[in-house]
Amino acid sequence: MLRIGVLRSAMAACAGVLLLSSCVSRPMIMDQVGVLELGRTQLDDGRTEIYRLGGWSEEGRLELVVETETPREKAHLGLDLKEFETDIGEGLVRRGLVVNRVTWESPAEAAGVAAGDVVTAVNGTEVFYRRQVEALLVDKIKPGSEISLAVTRREGEASRSLDLRLRSSTLSYTETTQESVALARPSYGGRSFAGIVVGEVPADWSRRIYGADDASVVIGRVVTGSPAYLSGLRLGDRIIKLDGQPVHHVDDFANEIATLGERGEKVLFEVSRANHTYETEVQLSDYSRRVTFGIPFLMKYRGSCETTEWSVGPFGLIFDYDGRYLPDSRSREPSYHREFQMALNLFEREWWPTGHRTELLWLIELESR
Image (cartoon, rainbow, N blue to C red; front, side):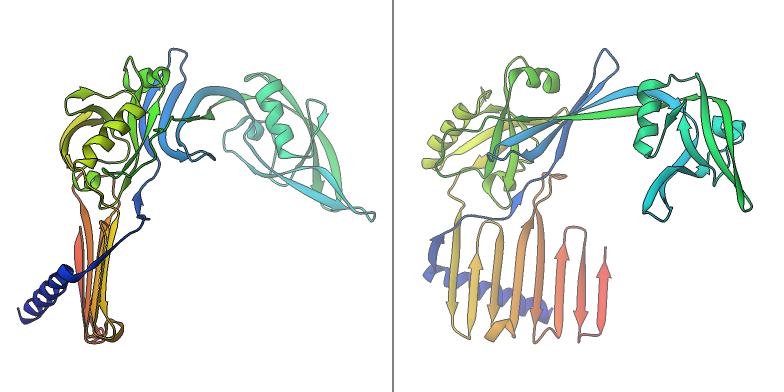
């Protein structure tokens, strides 16, 4: 109880000096940003489209990344091949592909191919690289067709050539292609009063992702500790309404936020993500201020929307506190991390959303998760 009382007193003292503090406007650097899956669609031809948000183009625009998974079939032999070179006195020369492993109950095993064999040709085509064989199995050889393998097998000091026949089986696999779509950004370049970066999903992609008839505005970044973050807005949220009015275009949205933000008003957001709708009220403000105050060798305080740091004594030797919001798109509740140290780290206490840790006299450590 004594330690807690000292901590609270120190925090209260530091809070009191804010009345004398000076303010400097600086950009925030800790953002909630990342790659997030928005959804997926099964197309009529069997392909699957996966929509992800979070990439950035070279022009600094938010990107929609579309992955298309296409089911494919190819011929399968059951061989694990590796490339090798042979020294013939004049340099290294490629001599086929070594069989590293033969899959159990595969066409290759049934034909008598063994580990250590060297495959020199497939259906009469000489092979030196694994990608050659892969290209043949994908483009030239049909699943279920008969294949001839020219194989060299070492027997003692000698070697002999074999012509093995086998019938390929069918291997199903998925071919993945990727496309990036740069999302339109607001032309407004003034102050941000909410703490979010948005992009406009074109109408055709909005229809495929959300089933909407018009373009959609989606959140691509949330500044940690900003009004939007504290109110529960998160990366990947699609903004449906603003104060009850539908939102479809980033310029209309940004201009409305700028107008309301200048007046310091509250605004009601209606957003959706993963088929769940969420409403929250955001108090718009200029969150970009960073407050600093200090008395040399006595105390120091620094605060922003994302962090709070204060210390007492030279280099924080008496008390040292660090608290910061954590970027986390999994929960709409703000996550916070705190760390407090005193007396040359003789006592150290750390809190985070899922647990805490206490360290005494540099030797005793208690942790709960």
